[in-house]
Image (cartoon, rainbow, N blue to C red):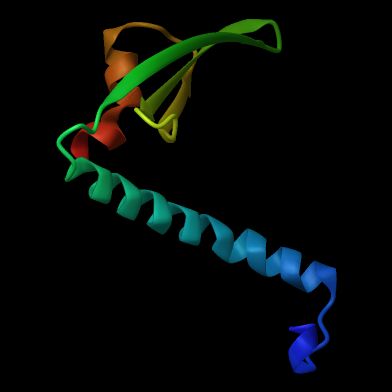
Length: 94
């Protein structure tokens, strides 16, 4: 922007990034997943971790593809089959 003679503050750039960054990220991620699904060797797996937040155990699930890219993540207070499927609902339905 400076090269074109437009002077903006860093706060303006941060505001726009906070506002539009998540939309760009979601669109890029969705296109990447759709593109990767067309390959015959595309694989993903579910990863489960435990974390203590304010003294309580929480469960953190991630869906990761074969390149190590995080496709979906979910945090829950409960563990079990229902919570695990809820965690990967986005990747299974996309």
